[in-house]
Image (cartoon, rainbow, N blue to C red; front, side, top):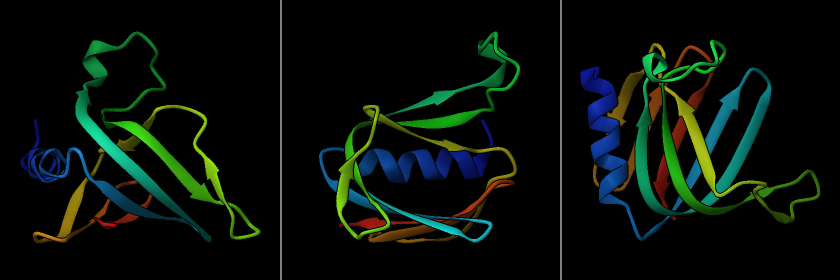
Length: 111
């Protein structure tokens, strides 16, 4: 596993049992998710049959996202995936981590 992925997984694992806020900037779209993190798993592309699935960190728990009206709406599944292809950590401290992947830019902090 890549060192950046391992560092991010360690940071997220340390937040288990807490609510985190995930801001994801993808192109011109900004999503904000409040997520009650229970556990973190790693999915390796070598372990899946579907070729379209990338390596990813799978955050397990429950969460809500802000809709266009500013209302919190429950996530459709009890997990949140962060694809880790090309992962670069820009900043990581006790309260927040900032990262970039091939798809998006993230800011994850304690809520």
